[in-house]
Length: 334
Length: 213
Image (cartoon, rainbow over all chains, first blue to last red; front, side):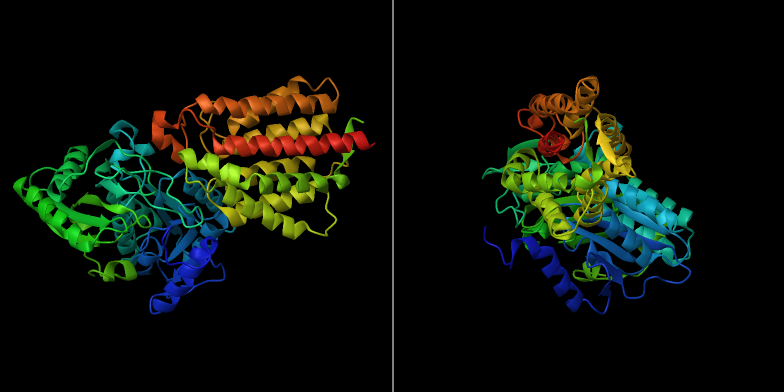
């Protein structure tokens, strides 16, 4: 394992310190070392937006803390859910009395810890409602979509939820908007090299040279098929063939496209894929309202990409247009 | 004797801690087959924090289990933090205010542990989780409750082991390993394995406590 770290068991602690130092114009540390908050949270008159998850997905999750997006994040070990206490403390850091929307991804550990934290918060008089992202099309069939994982589509859910809160939406309205965002969002990933948790020291799954795993999860969960390594254009086709019919996205739809590298993919190659994605979408008469290309939601040093499409309506369009200031979105574009 | 004193229960905690520390690498290795490979690391972290916190303190079983539960729930996270945290919290609650722990109390500790874990998620027997160890262990203990406490413990450990081994042939239905589908068959479930090790350690220490008097 060739990595730039100190003690493998303390990569999360070490990373958080550097992150807060570098982004102190946006975020601050809290009493709980595993909770990072927006400098201005809690924001008077607003529903608090909280998320959380395992580490190793930078810029997710803490990179989306900031103006009009996420107020507080619970930070877990690498690929491991934050504690219930971290979620509870994040709720407290975000709560301004209008309740807290906890917008997170569908993973067993996160589900349990959020459930426990929500119960504890209620005992302290904080109202918490949740939306569980399940945009990863490859992780379960459509008729079992409640089993699907949350992946990069979570970013769009946070953006829409945060925007609704910024407009003074009630907790119910914020939850409804975030739920609509994720219901309209579909993602799929392709992995071409595995990733290694530093404290474990070796990859716990394998992607053979010359092959790729279509539908791979953000922690190396197996996909739907292993095929020969394809070209960038072919990958664009394969991913769109999975996503488009699942929604379905059809002619005259307007969409947000989010193409993210998985950590080790050169940004250059992500643009090669995006070129073909845009070409196929325009052939089908699907209009790209906005596109994001870059390392938005990664899996340590995995090489690969994820593609996310969100179908817009007037409300989602308006909310996607709300200005944000977060590390994750400004590293490539606002 | 057919019971032991709650106030003598700290050794049970020490036994649990030791077994996790000794099996840290083994648990991570099993987990690496179909999971992240960090089960031993995370468990060892929680149990070792507990070791530090209880060192030198006179603790009864109730308080010791509660200390462990709170560390797992509040400081470990992942899936195992809430699951084992709830299991030990329910066990602790069951023993609260009880001077003597007899087989009836222990049976209730096991039942409450099962119920607590089931309240957190949707896992059932056969889903390749810690319940595949815990549920048969609870049943076996209850079935043998009319014999003496030590014998019932032996039955519990045997069934826990069989339950743990049964996970080899199961397909995971819950958690990250469930994403592997058929590929999850053929290896032990890490949670079921740590649950067996914990029940075995707990049972062994209880038997020692019972034989002292």
